[in-house]
Length: 436
Ligand SMILES: Cc1cc2nc3c(=O)[nH]c(=O)nc-3n(C[C@H](O)[C@H](O)[C@H](O)COP(=O)(O)OP(=O)(O)OC[C@H]3O[C@@H](n4cnc5c(N)ncnc54)[C@H](O)[C@@H]3O)c2cc1C
Image (tube, rainbow, N blue to C red; front, side):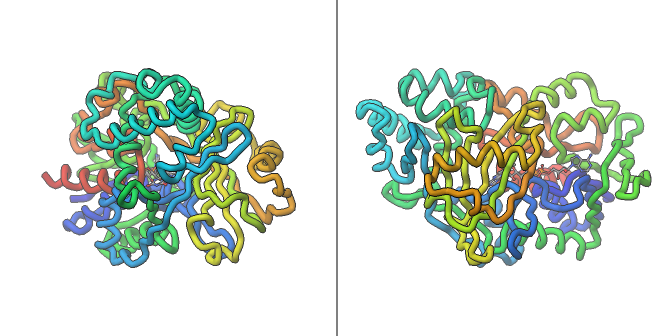
């Protein structure tokens, strides 16, 4: 079969890789000038680095299996993670259960209560009972209002902005349940994985396999329209980098673009399916990446629980990966998840930098602007689907009402949080559906 795929992110590439192996002819179209989507990389200090921080969990078996398949297993390395929470003017470590016991901003009773309920969630295998309750309601009821205000609300705001009080408890359960698998025995430190050479290694290996099987990957090429006759897909109308339009015939089309894009591409979708597509809201990620002369902290992942600070997380990549790879410089991501009409989204990188610098001094009082060698500013749209209550009823089907048109995007990943591992699973699943 001739198959057209919209999007060269991990889902589109994995789907194409599988379909090529099964003997189909596959063309991928990617509107960006690069391959890899949200997991794409760029060059920093001579090495590849993700536009948005990336790591893997021990539970990410789908991508680990894919790496093995691609002959990349030896590049997947595991590191002890160091997690912290900036609260009340201090960095509090949160890497082991003992750290929770030492977290003085919460009364001792609350620390114990939080610890017990976290353990219960780690051992709860089913998520359905959390579906209809918000994380806010559940956490306040079980872990207490102080734990919610001090720890959970900042974390939820960090990931979901103003939607923090709408998020389903299933999302929190997924984070806690799956991440326990990333801990060493006896609840010790969490292990995080990273492909040495960056996620580009996976993206390039997939691309090479697709090309060598006769497939094509067309960057800077936007799918403008999915063409269909009598409710069956017949092809794609595309616009290439030079602005030239062409129409290509396909038997099947897979869209990995965010849900809200599909109704603009496929004109004859029924209203009911369009309503489901439009139910999912997404937040964009805004990242300022600093290349520093000196380390900002000794923590890899620092959540910011201080609403006077205009960012929600600091991920110091070189506190996980050896900074020799980046010319002995230190790589720090400053992150926010926001809507596209927010001030942070609309600001220039230089404005964000100016705003952020005084706050970086709160994290490390020695920090000087002169430590900044260079900085990069990235915006990634549809970075995080907003997982509200009863989300499972709102997920659009992979098989759309138009024959031969399939949907595979991050809004369909549930109950787990979106991630490269699940985009691999999604891509494979779609290739299975197409072959059935
Ligand atoms: C800041 C950030 C941090 C993250 N951290 C991690 C992490 O630590 N670990 C982890 O596993 N995952 C992480 N993720 C998530 C992970 O990167 C994504 O879940 C995954 O890469 C999504 O892949 P995808 O192929 O499903 O979607 P995407 O990567 O979004 O791919 C869809 C592609 O479709 C293209 N497209 C859209 N419309 C059109 C059109 N009309 N024509 C042609 N092309 C089109 C888009 O340009 C895009 O490239 C992170 C994401 C972000 C944003």
